[in-house]
Length: 302
Image 1 (spheres, rainbow, N blue to C red):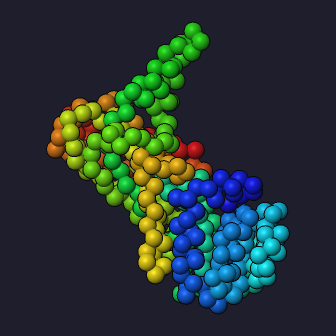
Image 2: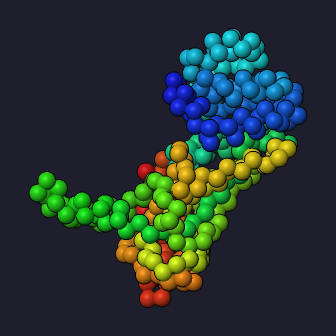
Image 3: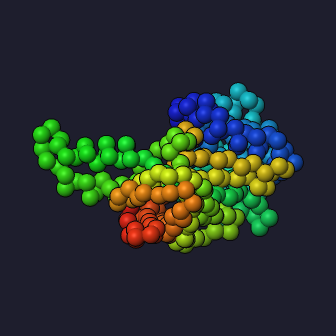
């Protein structure tokens, strides 16, 4: 949580309330524990952790307002640091790590590497991360109107022929939600990650998929959306950032080379491979197999 933009985050209930509930409704987990808040900003979650019984809270990436907020709330056991955890040496292990590590497609634009490094260096053997699990789901979609609009734009840009650009535009993932009536298949879980145990190499994967078409339609691509979970809380908290309603961590659309005619009951299958290069670069390979259609497309999320 960063700077004065925290106001926008605080107003985004679907984004902030799962963290608030995970802390304030699970005080038994925080009592006398040492907590590491990796993205403190103004310090909201650090304050809540302290008020929930934490013995000590280390608040990384705290902004210039955080100290006064601690003072106004009479919080004396939060250590504020402007730096990120990789630039700081803590003098002890921690019991809980709190971090909104997620990004689009789980990892793009997030801070998963930082969490793994902090976990390996500072988390006690019986400690845990909030949230601790993430999942990716895949569905096929019909989005020909926007896809065609996006491609046809390059036919003539202020009278200049730029059709050559289409081959590159087709490789760009689209980060956007869609309407519910654009989904034309069931959903399939295609990837899971456990923050308690994962290694950097586990952030790359190649998994097959097979989705069942629900109606006679055209399939113009697939949409990949996510769910993340707090499973160490008394009642698990599952947050779905779905294909049609994701105000912040939006899903990712991967368009096919051409639209595919599909019928109810058809099985669209293939594989999705993601190579994690960094928090700001994902290499994506999508294969599609159905009847006479067999091809592979490559995308880059950066």
